[in-house]
Length: 214
Ligand code: AP5
Ligand code: MG
Image 1 (cartoon, helix red, strand yellow):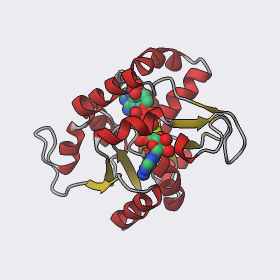
Image 2 (cartoon, rainbow, N blue to C red; image 1 turned 135 degrees about the horizontal axis):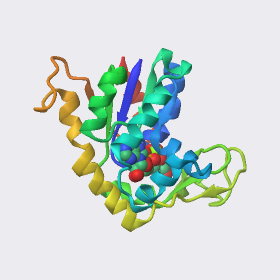
Image 3 (cartoon, rainbow, N blue to C red; image 1 turned 30 degrees about the vertical axis):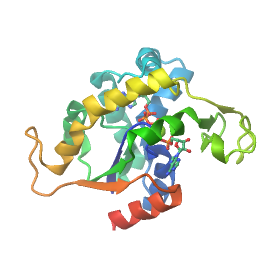
């Protein structure tokens, strides 16, 4: 299956993608994670992406589309994919329809007022990449799974979060119309979009996503 998770920063795309990709037997591809890894390895793509990410702005379409095209050409994507954080603009969605069109799009819907505390309280493990919220952690610095050191993402600061949310509403939300076939730019007979309520416990959101996919 070829699946997209759409949703604002902090909606729980990454949290849900690990379990759902394992369930479906397809790779979890997060463009945000790919950029963070490129930054860590100081590749040209990473160096270019960093200034946009630190400012909370979207990386230019051409850079992201080339990166995703290369990734989707890899062998493990023959069974499909779960894309998390891509596409984020209508131009990216049109490019994906040419490269390998998705079967379904799950929009994880969470009201804006819930997102700030989710993001400012997020901690990520530098070793196993596990994602947590400080409210779940006995020790804010050590990963409860592997003991690795937890860190806070550079873009999880309140001012940057505000810019990211604005980018979501201005540039990414038009994809809701694009995939539901209501946009002027793209007309499909059957909507590929399903919206799930992301404002409940992670395990409940997981069950809703699986039920929606069936
Ligand atoms: P990216 O890494 O994709 O960030 P994002 O879309 O802003 O989304 P997040 O990763 O912040 O949130 P999430 O939905 O994954 O939430 P999570 O599961 O972690 O992109 C970063 C940057 O890269 C962009 O700003 C841009 O610059 C660039 N970029 C990436 N892709 C791009 C593209 N296609 N085009 C252009 N630029 C691109 O959960 C968040 C927190 O909430 C955690 O603490 C978690 O524990 C908690 N939580 C999760 N679920 C629940 C729940 N149900 N209830 C309570 N808490 C929950
Ligand atoms: Mg994420």
